[in-house]
Image 1 (cartoon, rainbow, N blue to C red):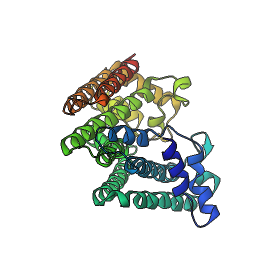
Image 2: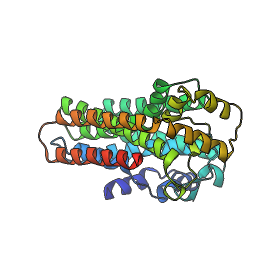
Image 3: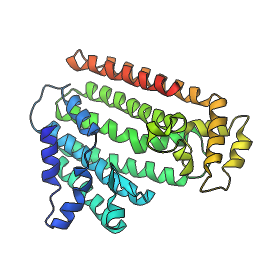
Length: 312
């Protein structure tokens, strides 16, 4: 990870100092670096050592960072990771161009890893864009259902998590069946993380979230529990509450949350999350014995604990 941090700083240097400053703005704010870490861990499923896994981690983190710059423009966000966002600190134009620069650097870093790596990075960013567009299309719209919701979170969250694991395993020299298995595991894990995040947005308190509960509803993003509740017995009431009130009053948001929770839809969605963890476990079982496989099981258990905490 130290090598990843060094390379991230190195490859985000531009010919102009101003662009370097903008491109490294979020980089300096830190972050979990979860995606490059996953790439490095997945690389341990193969026999190869060298710079490939580090470069894979750098490439996926650059895609993530570039997408955040663009997301903040779309969301008109004022802050990111405790710092003023690029679009708020400078302009939307600057943020978009800096995001483009980071995405271009991601492709440049991936190029020496081979044609498959470059194609995977490009395809993943296209999927991220599709997920973002779908979310915009469905904004303030209760007419879509679970299939469309899964398309959104698969595109916006799970796709890059899957690519991180897949690219790491490829650069580590893992065999194709192992690459496919860790890719499926990571996809399901990404879906579970997003599903539980969406549940917590409805039921966790402000001290945990750092923002009021129901912020997704306030932004017109209706996640799976609310979509299911809108098709249940209290559906007409929910649809009436969310029909034309944007921005929604906090009291309206609280009513929708109450109807969703009392209808049992939180449990329905968390049951889906548990089933996805089981699918991830089965995928991990296809990986040949490796010191890493026990850690995958530990992560599966972490996801189950996360679901349990959301259920409480």
